[in-house]
Length: 268
Image (cartoon, rainbow, N blue to C red; front, side, top):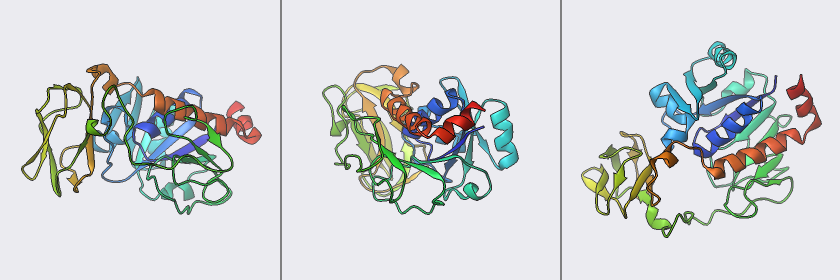
């Protein structure tokens, strides 16, 4: 049995988890006590709040210990455990460690050097803080595996959807607690109030569907991303893992299967 621990349970990490799960790899997701996933309907991190979430018919379940992790695997579910520092690595024999937190800055790895480590996106450098890194930026290199060099740096500019780019991202107007006025999947018109922070409203920038929104009650800071609106107005997009996430997951699977010892374990 090949076991992979994924650090982070956001939408990209969840796409990776699904790819690996469908390929016969046992996945464990570690998260912090208050996850900040925006596209919550396709993020296994949501299990921290709801105890259970199904993404494309695969259930992710909040667990407390190793026994419950084993029970999840037996029932073909993906366990999610609150373990911000991935301390579970010291207690469970792990074949692959994947850092999918998408911090977009240089990561100081504290993971044992003998553990095969895959970095997701900017901040990872093979032979420095990982064994390989996966490109996360859309384009001809999306999902590619880099064993030397590194991926493209984050430029802070959101990817374009339809005619919209930066304006599709919803950001907090100030410091405070987020209060939602809408839900993911709702269709909104220009100027509709989507959420508020300490009485300051966050308005829909155009006609579209709310594809992502932070969990209500989260403490946010000025300019923090709290959601996004999709101009395609298709609520189904809110519950489907994105092509980007699946492409990155394919890159992770390629990296794992490129190691003969990992292929051997998976075939046992």
